[in-house]
Image (cartoon, rainbow, N blue to C red; front, side, top):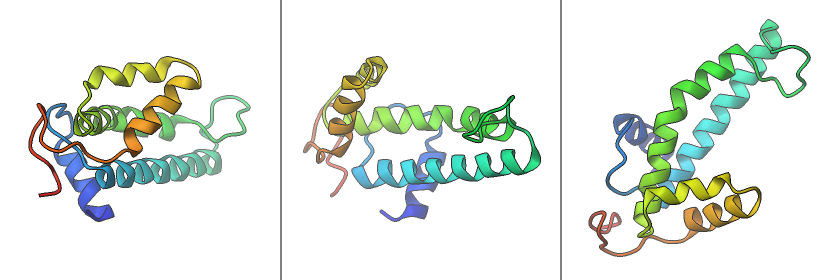
Length: 124
């Protein structure tokens, strides 16, 4: 799956929490979100739209982008967990400092599980 295909797939499944998402779909989406936030931060800093005296560039545009991308970001994360045979509730482990992020990173990096309860093997 290419970068453009992944982004259009995630947007077409904006708030779809069922099904599966391949590794490439998840990581291309993650790159897209990172690029959006970097660009939004630069625009915020250039336009003086940051909150107070922040140095990381967060501001109004980055906040709006974050709200717009919240649901598709959660949905693709849940579908990626489904692809590994796990429930979407595993996303909540990310709330545990440090170790939760490491566990989620491991789940997002491992290969797809063959046919499981969430659907057929996505690579076929």
